[in-house]
Length: 108
Image (cartoon, rainbow, N blue to C red; front, side, top):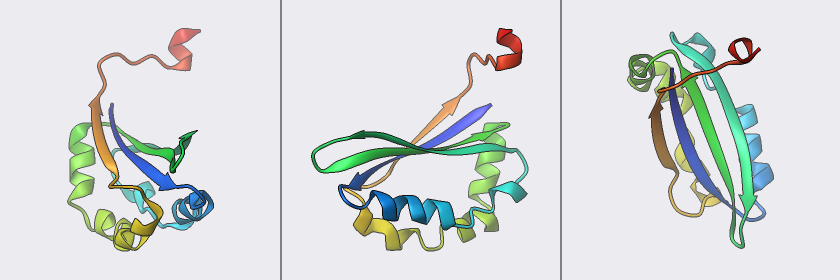
């Protein structure tokens, strides 16, 4: 398993607009080989921003890297630059390889 995460510092008062962008975008992920899941998470609010993290789970790093070179990736990110006014700073990308994995079936 491989996880790709982006952290966004969303300006106070822009949270609803930010969530709408993500809710209404056509990510094209369901058509991409190796894609497992996507989540958008809201974190703590600070004085000037609210922290968000988006993450995608992939079968492998290779599947993720193939997606980043695909037309589906370009289409999903085509209008991303128009959302810069919603952010404090730039999104931060973090990439993780699975070391230990335990799911609900294994925990039982």
